[in-house]
Image (cartoon, rainbow, N blue to C red):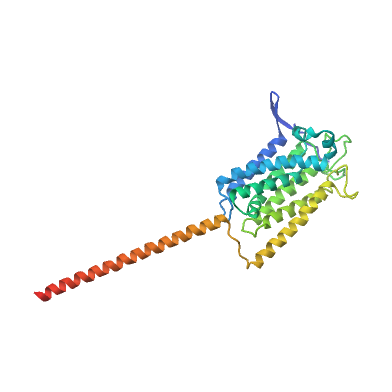
Length: 316
């Protein structure tokens, strides 16, 4: 067995204010998404400029936090919410759900895409590679808090978590999720989007990748008290629509792409670039015409001068 590295969930405290690892990981995830987003904004097919990424992260963060909290309350603690509705607002007591956060971010992106006047698909595909870093850091925070640990096991890397009342040797499932949802998913989606892809393809791959990773890890994670169909965990049940939707989105994306003769529909930024290029070409044509006119006039002037001299000689 491996010894669990006990880490204080509180980084430091100043009076009544405490800075916790859980909040810090969220902050680092948003910072990483911001830096990566600015880097991706230089791609020719990017739906936004680098200076617009800051607003994107604000919209996304708001959607993730509100959606994550509301999703947790509805998916995992609805009975408690009915008994104590104000529990929804006591976020410091813990409780965030990824699937709720995903829905929150999606609604936030709908609003931001309208603000930018860009296709929703382009904005969602832009965001897809930005999410895995935050997901991985969030799972690391779960590990530091010794929460959401795995099932009992006898594997050599099993750990005894201090928050486990039974003190059993368990899978460090938070680290499994950190690796699959953070590292593997980042490499997969970021590498996929290094080239321009059809609309919704990157989003579909993200949904499929996360759904499969989460479904697999749920076999090693301590299941929720209430199972679906007496064998499926709530996390697996909520991941199934992601897997099915991701596959359907990828299939539809490439079907439409090949139906259109493997041509991309231009974004607003593409149209602006094309218009600028067209204006430059038109201006160049005008300048060329002017130069040709001047050259022609110059030739006429020279010819006229030579004729004058010739006539004067004849008169002499």
